[in-house]
Amino acid sequence: HRHTHRVKAQYTPRLENPSLRVFRQVSLFTIVAHLVSTMRAIVAPQTAAQLSACQAKATSSVPRHALRPTLCPSVSSSIRGKILELSRSRKAGHTLRRGHNSVTLASSTLPTFDLDIPSVTNLDHLKDDGYCGADGTVLMRPPPLGLDVHNSKGKYWIKTFGCQMNMADSERMAGVLETMGYMSTDDADSANVLVYNTCSIRDKAEQKVYGALGRQAKRKRSDPNMKIVVAGCVAQQEGETLLRRVPEVDLVMGPQYANRIDQLLELVDLGQQVCKTEAIEILEDITTPRRDSSTSAWVNIIYGCNEHCTYCVVPQTRGKEQSRTPEAIREEMAELGRQGYKEVTLLGQNIDAYGRDLPGFADDGSGRRLWTFTDLLQHVHDVPGIERIRFATSHPRYFTERLIKACSEMPKMMPFYHIPFQSGNNEILKEMKRGYTHQRYRRIIDTIRHYMPDAAVSGDAIVGFPGETDEQFQETMALIREIGFDTVNTAAYSPRPNTPAAEWENQVADLIKMDRLHQINALVNEIAEQRSARYLNTVQEVLVEGVNPKIPTQMMGRNGGNRSTFFDGDASMIGQILKVHVDESRTWSLTGHLVV
Image (cartoon, rainbow, N blue to C red; front, side, top):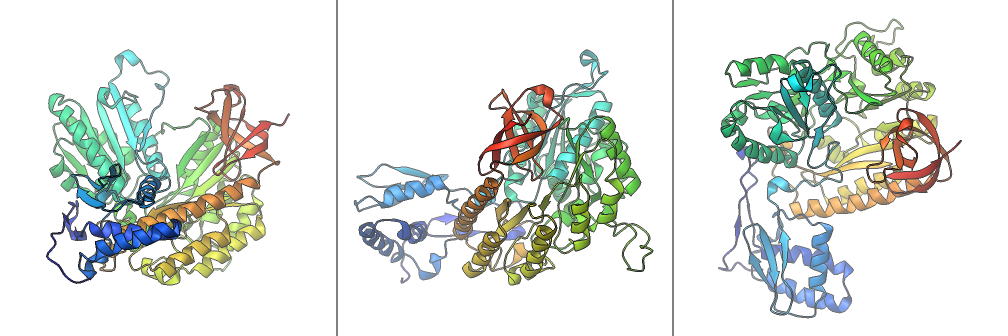
């Protein structure tokens, strides 16, 4: 462990925000040292002795301070398998060879394994990479009624990254574009207007957007009439910087301008390059969104967020909280009921904070605001035609017993609650500025199950938050075991621009983040499978949403607990709520047969 003169490989990936100062200089021998430690517990004893020798050889050549594994390999199961195969060999003399984008483990007697080592910008792998998936979702709708496809203004293409809020914004932009005379396409290369509705919660999604823009910028140079629009949270975060970086972009617009895209495109038609990210009072949306489903619809009830979590960019990108009026929300739901929609999901970044910015106080002397989220649910519960109501996302600080009790008494409310907990350790929660303890979170879940014993509960968790120790991480694991979540969305902590935690010096090594992420995902899958099993041999009410794309003779839908459910049927069943006997349960889905 003495300092030597061995040359070290320098690994300094470029970050878009230099203020993050995440520049690494690490000996590549550190990788072997760390992975060998990880593998010791699972390899044969006789192999462990050889691995110790290999580890000693690696670590004796580098300074002790270099043993902090701050390089960013994603320790995926495939990489673990390759390392295990290598470690089980009884051959010696392994060396490391550095390639352009990979580290190669080589030996004269073993096959060569190329292990992808992503840059810092790709470290934050998720279990599901957000609502729209790792690569985003393209919004595709049939031409609106009455549109002459031969005389349309052109085609639009919208790709959405991130959460349900972004999905709802994309639907609204689609509605506006269709009123302008555009029609939808799933082919980006044939579109006249390309819209990237972006997410900045994690760096991975942000970099995918920049990669896609580079490809379309090349096309823009040969087709100046096409328009490139960047909307959403990356647009709000980057602003004019994005225009300087990709000058081919015509319009950069924050999420608060979703229903004004027509006005901004008119400015583009006049030859202007437009950036609209300033905060505005969100106007009541009178547009007709182009829904991504014919049975379920998103309805925004509150925009923005007033919280100040130290890891989160949402308050910067979505702005302050602005609640819609109860009358506007009810009218939008009533129109959806008239159109044949059966289910509505009410949306907000912090949905339980609804009404804090609306005037008035309750007349019962409690000091409560005139309109709370509980009051809103009671106001819209009887909307004709709407048979199911869900909501997301909740904050434990504002989730009350009054809300839980009210939900249990309203039959249209689905027994599914998404309440992020982020960590099971109070010190980490305090550093995150979440405003609650794990004891408070446990009491919320206990109250839910007191009123609704079979309710499904999901959450969010971040591993590797700055300063998180292994003992603190184990408290998060214990919380997951104790509560028994139906699902947990997991993420390795990703430093985001202009957030306090990104500047802290006690960042957790990326290898440790990835190892913890794999541990927590394994536990989440195990418990989710157990939770699915409780539906076996029960009859579930399922809202039929469409055809199973993998098995055309099957239909698919969701039960009250939000589990995907498959059964034999035909397209005439779409939009109906049917009773299905569950014959088979899997980690994330169910299969059954219709009950006649």
